[in-house]
Image (cartoon, rainbow, N blue to C red):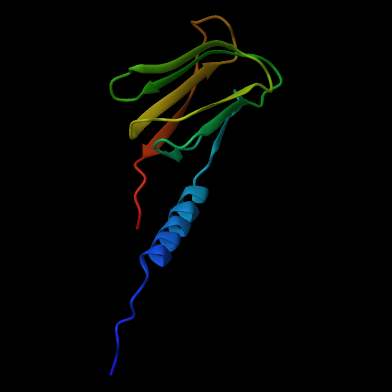
Length: 124
């Protein structure tokens, strides 16, 4: 005869925490801005998870904007971003976002944009 095992609620919660932690660790928690990137890849981050955004280029970056892709609503704007400087932010709303920046101060100079897909975190 097969008996169903009773799992204590605390054991289940610990298991769920480890599964969620493993999923969270699978996605990047840092985004590097570098104007020499030719074909930046799609980045995935979880909603409400802090992401470190840094300038790894050897010079200043300009006119950094973080915007919702569909509405073009600006979430964040930074005029000058020093080499080696970084900041942390989180996205409170799931959806697609763009992080755009320029290596020149002139606003007419083309920008490089990264696509960020903010995923709603779900427990399995």
